[in-house]
Image (cartoon, rainbow, N blue to C red; front, side):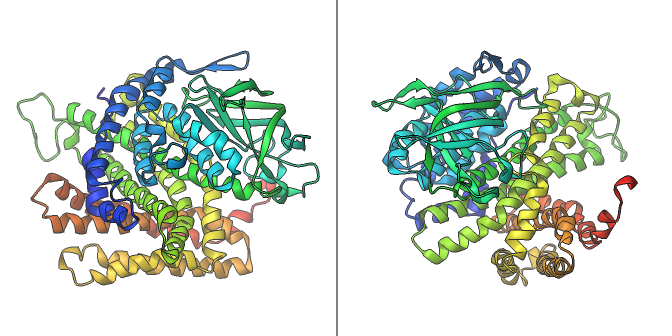
Length: 594
């Protein structure tokens, strides 16, 4: 089956036509470092690495899996060599601080590279992927000594990082965690306990693994207010800064999983391991949110990656596979049958994938623009707006894009018919690999509670208004644009309804707090569909302004926008009904009535 090919023309459309990243970088003082020539070179060189080096390892890595023996993990054949090529090319350092050896390029370029890497080989991409969150956490919350000890090695890629939160008895409810941290005489801490589900927690790719670990001090308050954060390396850095003595932590096992077989999901046992406090005592969860929010945007990319890979493979298959005739008459009468892409229902499946994945890509790269602004702008008002938008859109991106990414992966498999269920085509692996994305870094339900409960209701709609105002201004500016009238009235109506729904649910929650939990997932999915409607309307405007006859991508964007509004966006109607249906439909059941 055809291999992955990076969608470079779509990247060019998003970066230079839809969002004008050239002007965006210039406004942030990054124009010289991220000129269009440099950005396009990153597109092209990243694509070569992903297409030629790691994409060919995707299936073989899945079939071989990781090998655990006596606490050590060996990755599948070719993974270590590919990682060394990645390091030698300087990819890990691209979007990090020049003070510690980074190239200082915008975070949005790192997001784009992560998308390519993840689509080519998600399991492989997780090994360097978790390092970004570790670097951000140490950069923002670590001491200068900690930054000096770890950042340069992590940025170089010689060391990798992990996030250690979950324990066997607690997942989302971190207030229950039991891992202990006891002070040592030298100012460090002794960390004892076990963590599970640690992605890339043990492997043979890098010289050292730097674990960012949540633990509880002896005198800590109960619950989440008593959690502290520590850096605990696999090998303790020596006086020369290199990996030295082995720390007293070990990999007790690796999980046997549904998918991402080539990434080691580890059980880690900390047996009095030496660690160092990051940030203030008992404020570890606040610091860890830096890591978690980075990982949540990364997980949104997994949904996008699954959709892109499935679409590429199913589109090629549907153009090639011959079966039956078009109902309106043979389209290729000289062949024994028409290609199945002539059938309207096959096109429904393909276009659903295309509309969801390309819309999701717009959302994610819009989010990545806000990350750039938050980190690089010198205008405090602009920084605050970006921060507010990130707070609102991160749970939408994480949960909505992974949900529709899984949908798209399943549609891709369906396009193959029975062949999709067979390993050789790669579709069943894509479905298996994608499925975890709606679970880790906070399930869809957890993200939905965060969105509706914290980000919308707790702020009395202030964060939502940041985004709906932007949509309103776009609609207002284009209300008399005849070419966009098939989009503008519906977008304006939905944008207004979005705020009204938030108010309705807020009033309902004042009478019964369970209304938030009952409606939150429907509200999140509604939010996702409306967000994509905004970006598809913007894409349609770019396509029309560019002249849809000038290049096929513009006609494709306009037609896909029309498909989205006609065949996907109406899902919001049923979501309005279900989120208003009330918690009593869920909570009236007695336990013995289930």
